[in-house]
Length: 391
Image 1 (spheres, rainbow, N blue to C red):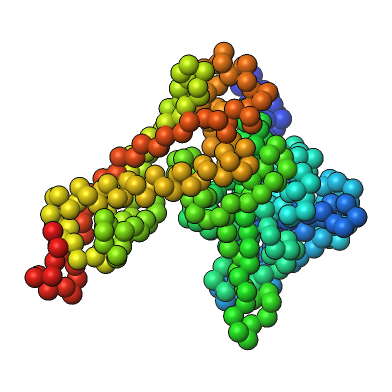
Image 2 (cartoon, helix red, strand yellow; image 1 turned 45 degrees about the vertical axis):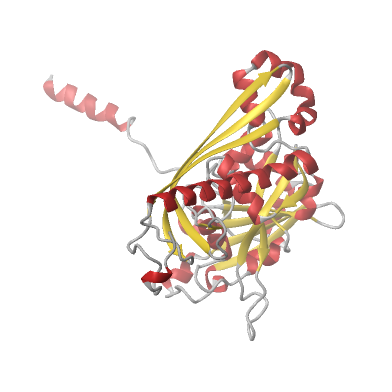
């Protein structure tokens, strides 16, 4: 009897074992590392894929070998992104795999025409990751993927590293989806340009860089802003945790450089007598990393004055970002709609269909509390005689 139950248990356990019927070998898939999506002259969708070549690593490829040794560039053109991807699959001998694609780039033509239909494919497909970064490129998107960066393995990796370090406004696929379905339904994406190659180098021997941001009304790009304004938006959206800020101290011609080590931003909406108001409260702390002036940073009164100038500089950056959004674009990409909806749901319901008319009229005030924690390891300006140090 005991032997019977042991045999029965063994037999039943067979059905509990998982098989490998759906196993996919690495050699059978085309690993996409970066993808560019653009509009052709005849309004077709062009998809360009940067395909990783695994055997390049085993062959001794490394830093300095360039993306040409590690990636393959292939394109497909169709009536929409799904059709273009199917055409792309026809020129690849392996099954396309999106799970490792960390970068998606929209061309300017597609961005201005609208990205919603093609973005739908990305969020609907099970493989693309929500953590993948989204971009708009001023340069030809295919050429961006063909670049051979000297430090990284391929251009897609360069773009990912730039946003990992918060060089530009980091927007993932999940972030973009939330923006386009938010109360304001507007979006902002980092803007790519390409450095000209050094003398004696080919056109592809260069790197992409982030230069400002692209502004979207609904799903269509309507303009761009520069790096300075982008940094202001990053302050408002609480994305700028680490940065170096240089500013003139009082009447001094030279500058003080402070590296914020901590920052926190809160939005405080208020409606008073039918006037919509927003207070942006900023708490920032930083260390002095360079002193070009003759000021003695060990003097408490001097530090207090520097903190005021430090705060004014942050305030100016934020105001410079808000100004074009309210006066030029009439576009809310800084979460004002979400905050008013949360705090004043009844009032919001009345104006949500004309929010782009309300947003430019919001009275915005910026309240910055900036503190300098450490003046550095030297009390007086380096190389300056004591009798020339100012208090």
